[in-house]
Length: 491
Image 1: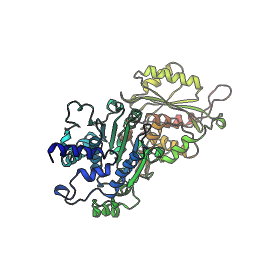
Image 2 (image 1 turned 90 degrees about the vertical axis):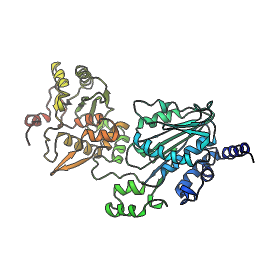
Image 3 (image 1 turned 60 degrees about the vertical axis):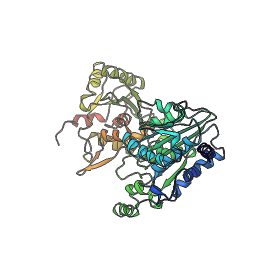
């Protein structure tokens, strides 16, 4: 048979596998030979995942209205990068003018793990001559299709979402891959979800990763959004290729139910760990409660103001009355006088009994001074100051623990995803015999931003406050505390 006929036969064979990624993987690689001499094909969990994609396609489940959405949480060493590579090569090989984007938790992961693994499987693939592989893309060698038949490697940025917003390919196929998805910012998930709306288009969205975080969109694929996703959780010990000796060492060292083993071996999300101040279930229950203000109208109205420290941060105003709280207002205002003006308006509008302003590092001092100049009575709070209760390392620790008690005792949080993330990322340790809250930088490292909303709400617990009496004079129980409170008291 001539080379032209052989090529035509290959094209027809591969084209017939457009709804059968598992058969493509068996056919496209020379299993049992050379580099693959130790392997006779995909592992069982990989077979099941490829089968699920194929079954959805064959059944027409991915009609033109919905994407196939698959989320796989796993322990270490199961071969997920290999599966990602196979899905990419199947998608681009079996349907002309397929477009896609592949991203990962970090640029380093994307370049050195995800894309490096794809380079290996591209080299071994029977269709490699149809495509050109570069450091950032795989695309058709046909110059007329190199812009329309391609899959790109894109490092995500919350300030640059265009690559994910532009995932449109009407009439053909779109592939979106998230590797180590637990640490990909929610904004990228949301932009991608909004973009995958083309009709008459095969849309396949696959997310893989270790379940390292108990918050965020990857976790929600297995929770509140489970009805939209095909989900699987893979225990590394059930996979043929993993190092069972090392896995057992981890189990022996840390314990079967430890978060280390849950995440790195069992493919399970971490529990509400022993040093988590706010449990996810408690926060979600608080946000689901009906506003209890009807029974709280007698309680003091308290404002908490967190003043922005850096260009990326926002000033935030929280309002609480007894067991009720309201949506927290964020302001990208660099001028402290303008922030003070907004706070003053809130004091007047809500007839607030007290307003606590974070003065840590001097950032809020200008707001406090400006409010005093216009006749308000703000109370500056130093997060690092001395707590009223000597069980707590500092004032910030005390306020957050009081907020935690309030939530657990029936407090009503506004339904706010950002606030939930900030609270659930908050942990504590012991400094001697005192409770010490994790730093703002620690929380920022987890969620990618400062916990401005949580800080503002915590400030409403700075001191006890009683409502003004009917004659308009304040008689606040916090006043006695303020007379003895010295934020700079030496330890």
